[in-house]
Length: 352
Image (cartoon, rainbow, N blue to C red; front, side, top):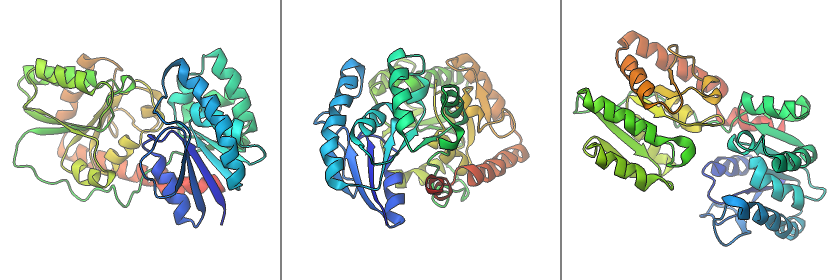
């Protein structure tokens, strides 16, 4: 048994699988939450009283958090620190770890959106150099940090993956409606560009396509997107569920036919893996992270990033698929997720 400290912002959606995994392996787990968090089922230490993660102030608060975390790390005296995001969690682990080894998991936006920043490059060089291992969740992130001189011996390329036993194709539920059923489970933030999806839906309605669209999640742009739906007269076709419990998600996914994501940048998207494992047809933006999983017109569809018109055209193409082709897509995606996206297998690599 090891004593493991996990560091991340308190609101990070995907931190719970890491906590649960380590607990299931018999380790003693503590959570150092940079910002407030709901109950994670382990001893939790909160560094900041408010959820401040954006802007220049956030950078200063990361440093403040790192120095504040030193006493906590010293008191716990863990065998390992696992810190999430090379920016927020990376700064805190770098400053607070002392001689305790730490793993950094880079999730995508931390490296990919900051790679051209001179300040962050300066910090990344020091944060990644001190790290015992660097866990990246996509080939694109691995290529970037290798270009910075990080040794491949330190890199573990594996996403957190999904519970493939929870998200599985059990046969989608039949609907009483003849409407096509679309779903998006990305939050309402700039990087996920849900407005492009809404514009494409408007084009579908203009051309007489009967559909139902479900948006799952919340975020700063939720109100703006809800107003767009009203302005386009789509309020009878579009449902906003808000954030839901992850245990409810498999059943909800099984009630839909197509998964749509317009993300402008990403690491390996767990939302995409969940949809693929549930037998939905993916229609996703043509970014590197999605290209690593989706071969256009072979197991899903890619559309031009930021283009609602191209998304509309791709949806129309997807709607013309034969039943045999749909079944091929579904089976190929199930096999792919089981091989590369299984949570137990992927997280076990961190201790290999």
